[in-house]
Image 1: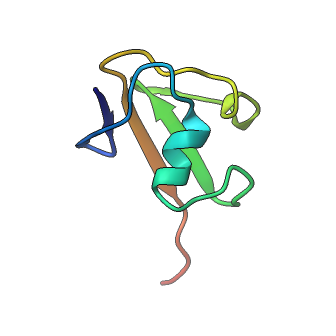
Image 2: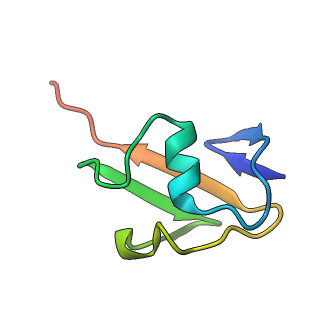
Length: 67
């Protein structure tokens, strides 16, 4: 089980960060997106290849404009 943005998800160990982004309706090329796995920021260059471990905690943050 993978925790995605604080919620249990049906993602499985071995899936990538790119798969997590797709579940959230985001593309790996989207601007203003940052990803942390187990509290560590993951460089965008690794999103397609980094396989998530069982019980990983994935946080996806998006920048928002406004004031």
